Image (cartoon, rainbow, N blue to C red):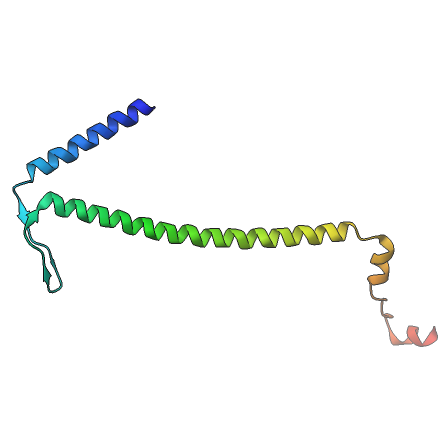
Length: 115
């Protein structure tokens, strides 16, 4: 598997090098707002644009990973609280359980007066 990765990597580098060599004489100027760059090779502009896009996407991915980690921590905390509550309810004795229940109200007022 490592051999295939190396071969693909070498082929990719050769394609990039070939692209750069074919476009080394084409020069362009980049206009951003009022700023105008000096003339530079086309392949350089494309590589810089690609690198900035990669950095931007990595930053967005890091923000998303941070949000998901925070959500995961919150969910784990809630899960632990619920597990603790279930454990407390399992360990509750029958006497405590029945004494904690409210006394049932009489079904009608006449039955309450008779007793």
